[in-house]
Length: 141
Image: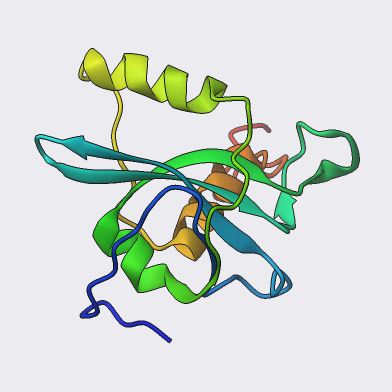
């Protein structure tokens, strides 16, 4: 098990277990790419085995997240055990390319949250607000 104080040499092709959300115990994280940026190292990861609510998808559940840029500290605080090295990487780099273009324009950021927290934030963003408004109130008479 790792802690935020442990130094880990994260590299593309590593698959890790991590501190998952409830119900996603078999989810893993795959490091897709490592970018050494002027602001620090950015790790690009993909997650599988998810149960992420997403009303925009048929069935309302997203099983994977194809790309998320994270800091080394965020990943270090999330991972538990290295379970594979030299894992095959997906051919589709569309998410990374989109991020790279936006980052080069100064319009993209990097997650500093743990992986579970990132999934919670994404889940909140893709879940529609309640019918009576965000706070359960309405201006209707």
